[in-house]
Image 1 (cartoon, helix red, strand yellow):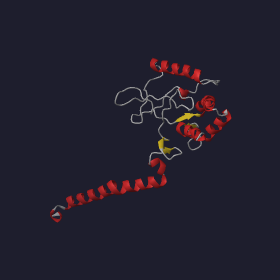
Image 2 (tube, rainbow, N blue to C red):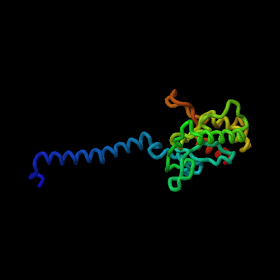
Image 3 (spheres, rainbow, N blue to C red):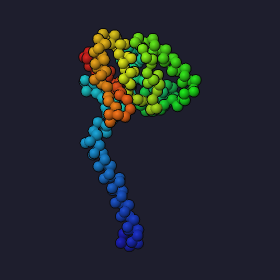
Length: 204
């Protein structure tokens, strides 16, 4: 039957089949294979496990730690909402979004002022002011990292709550500080989930 079709149509059909095979099967398999071999953790979600081997999160997606729980380092604020109800739900992994509030927004100004006042009462060693990432949300609402200044400001509270020497907690913070990307891009950061898991492991 195919031999009875015009030559141009036969060529079109063959090209379609070749490209369908190349782009729909071979290419995805090759890319998936390379990802699994070269970037295994990233390709599988950069999952983080606790000492018991249980998956507790991803190093790429931030988690919300109860701000009233003084044992833990707290992440930066999150503006994500529950997609089903539209109500605030910090670090809603299925609804990445920022607040979209500009610097002239009175809502943003009032929120930041309230957060600064709260931090001033919970953190006792404020000297040079409150780091900006302690009171502002990220563009995604799911930033897993905080700045070194942010972490250092929380050290005393966490140390006192866990009955640990401040110097020991600072040591753990230092051990979990990630360098700038490629050594020069951006700032040093600390993954909040990794840091809090390390602290929990010290008591197990």
